Amino acid sequence: MTLISTAVRATHLVTNAAWFGGSLMGAVGLNQAAREPDTEQERVEVSGTGWERWGPVQGAAIGLHLLSGIAILADNRNRVASHPPTTASVVAKTALTGAAVAASAAAYVYGQRLGDASGEDGHPREPEVAEDARGKLAWLQWATPALTGALLILDAQLGEQQRGRAGLLDRPW
Picture (cartoon, rainbow, N blue to C red):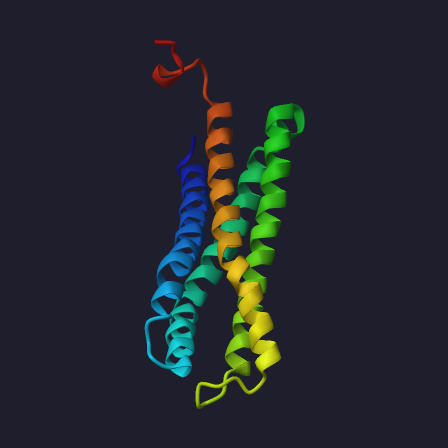
């Protein structure tokens, strides 16, 4: 294994961890904390500011994750083509990655809609749009960490497929 290969694999794992962790922190921490302020305007501002600050980091993580995934796939193309368990894992991982990108993009779009629909006084300028966006975000906030968590599990499975004989954890007690 070369230093470049190690760096690409590390980038792939670290960017997925950032994507997963940031999304989970947003769902569990930021969105819950945004319910604490007294007015609707303050609640929207807290949540919006947090996600605006995280957005560029998450965008960079997603972009680097996709690029490093393509590099890993190119590097392992023969194994992916000739080893059916690897092929199945890569197909599943590609589908999950696409779904995670779609969930992240949709959350961004609905977050923007919610922000745009919110009025200066804390009352929505467009109540129907705001309510629709809130409803979509209620489940989208959990979709991204669920999907990226599944990607981490598939990475672990692909790593297990690459190693040789069973290790200590696989031995019967």
